[in-house]
Image (spheres, rainbow, N blue to C red):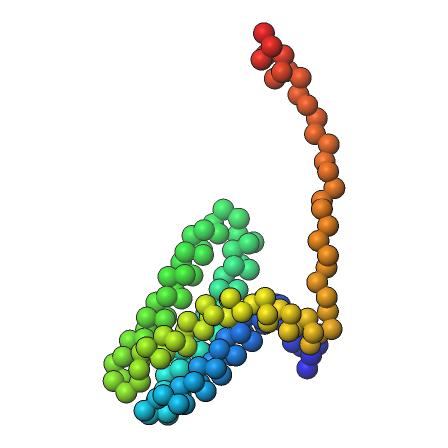
Length: 157
């Protein structure tokens, strides 16, 4: 199982862990304050699942864009619009249901933002679980540049 998990992109895995952790914290906190715990749970986990899918979509979009070259900006922009349209569609469904709370769904989606801030901690956790250490950064070797004397001669004249 650990070998399968190691094959997943590390940043993606760390964000998933952070989102899931935030979802658990929001779930347990909401159990104390929510009037209708069932609807709270459904609305929250709709947002959490949407955040998880959003992370995967962002990863795939950026991975493809790196191979595109000149058309990368347009592809990323189109993918962002598609992603936001899906989020708006889910919000519309939640709001039209008049049962679920769209603010709780928004809280679930915002777990993506919290997970991004938690990423250094989830990175350390993953390093411990996978028994890995980060490489020590080393400076790049200095490059020797050739000086073009024709430019300096023109300035001296």
